[in-house]
Amino acid sequence: MPDIARFYGIVLVYYGHIIERIMYLKDPTAALHYKFIYSFHMPFFFLLAGFVVAPAKSTLPVGRFLRQMAASRLAPYVFFSLLLALMSLIFPGHYVVVDLSSAKGYAKGLIATAMGFPVFNIPLWFMACLVVVEIMHRAWARLVAGTAGLFAVVVVCLLGGLWLNQRIPFLMEGKNFWIVNEAPVMAAFYLVGVFLRRREFLLGNVPRPVLVFGVLACIAAVMLTFDLNQGPFRLFQAVVVVLGAHGNWLLFTVTALAGSLALLYLARLTFPARWLLFMGRNVLILFCLNGVFYHYINGPFADWFMRTFEGGAWLVFGAGVVFTALSLVASVPFVLLFNRFIPQLVGKPRQSGPLLPALIRE
Image 1: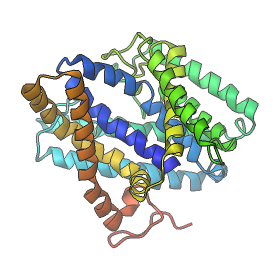
Image 2: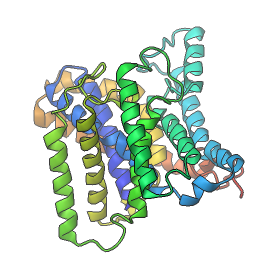
Image 3: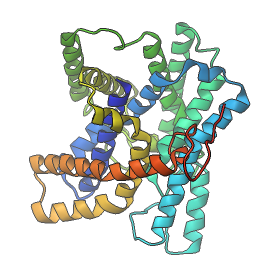
Image 4: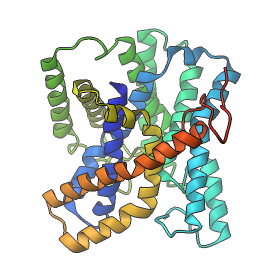
């Protein structure tokens, strides 16, 4: 079930990023779809990370924990950041955060990436924030061992993090350090995932009518609440986690939880086809590869689409779906290539490959 849920999540990431570029061209349908997806899809990934984390991970000795973190999280972050930084030397792309026309711009970009904001591969901000969230989880492992302690930490992190980000636009003021300002908010969802796994949520035999009802009820909750959240936001009239923009704290929380649960119910309801499991097991690579589309392909496609078809609700939706499907299919050969030759750098640090040894041996 988690692998299929991951796949549904990455579909929303790819769709959301192409819809974002159509939204820039003043299409109202794209703006609505963007607000819908962004209201829950990134909190979902953090909730799912907590759902699948091994309980023993939080009890590892500090040195071993940090080695695992470096191998499984930082190695892909560095590899895919450098890969796109090298691509930017050859191909012009969409890099609005830094000016890459000079060596000074590249130096600024590398410094920002080292500080946890990957300007050469924007989608990797999730990896940066996840590193901080998992370090936090390791630090408070004893506090969240019981249900009461876990939910106390959830409340403190959620409300404290939302309050802090509402008052200080960290990223926009150049105060970012590994998305640490947003980590408490996402840690709350991570802990909800931990709680759901402890309760074996959807892991046993669940009647199919219950799953169908769960999907429909959660989707209805998202539909009814996402547009009620009118901010205040930043830059866009939508929740954007990386900007620390959540809007109304209650509506944000309800919508994000409902959307996350909808994807879990839908995944449990879905037949586990081999191709779905394959895509889900390689979501980390797909997430990192999305930077190629984000910086180089989505923009030209959106420009071409709007010049050719002039938008329209169903056309925008259809274009987003088709482009998302083609993007994911186009990524598969690179997934196979990376898994074959450098699995250690793409989230599989215990595997050895023809070019590098395993990064973790214990």
